[in-house]
Image 1 (tube, one colour):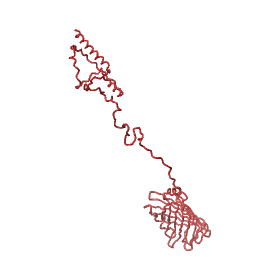
Image 2 (cartoon, one colour):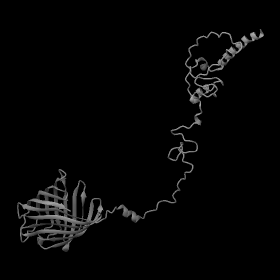
Image 3 (cartoon, one colour):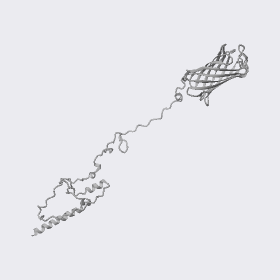
Image 4 (cartoon, helix red, strand yellow):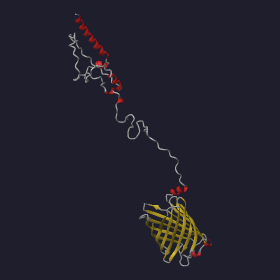
Length: 374
């Protein structure tokens, strides 16, 4: 009888022990119903145990589980999953296997290699030769500092280099006027005005010529040989000699003057002359190019001749001896070649008439010619 009384007591103790173990589990795990699994280990048979012939207690339906709060950190969830008691079989895990956490976040992230940017210990990441924190590898050796400053360049060599070979000699021939003159009074004739130079940007050698030729031969001609030097931007001073021919005995002069480009694109030239016997003279030239298109332009020009004393042999009186103005409409077929048409006015003041031919005090002439340079 004692044996039969101890069997029910043993069953009661087993029931109480099972309830106590369930209380020590996490609330979320205790309330959640076990997940069905086709591979779950079979429950331990208790029918063979002595005294276990009593009827099982009535099962009550489990309450609806509440949603467990979402874990904010993987480590917290891993900690809860790791609190499973030894010997407790979970769904999907064969009996007898050692307890392992089912959540992959429970594993230590530092124990597994990760791709895409995390470097392994002791190695440099990437092909750039630097680690993740931007430091150079340990075997990096900085270059040696320079031993001294740059080598100074001599002043003469620097001045020559700054010129950029601008003093290379060049040459140019330009004929501004080569025209036929149809005069309303007097004789028809030909006229020319041109210049040639050779040199660089600073120093040049000039040859200038101007004159007229009529039916009776050479009326007048002027030839100048000058050396020019750049005095300022767009301005040169000139020094040389001048020779006059035709219309009487020849004359020689020493010449000194300036020429250049004035503001608003006026081309100016002013030259003073000194000759034998105390003769002096001055000449002023001005011209301007008024462009209508890239090829069609109108050029007004003015020339003034002044003498210091009379020269009856050449028909020249002291003071303003002659003034000449003109308009020429030019069409540039190319920059180097341009035909033109125009008109010219000549005014002579107090001239002595040459012994061979008289000249009118006023003269108007229609002109046609070409301008070219190369």
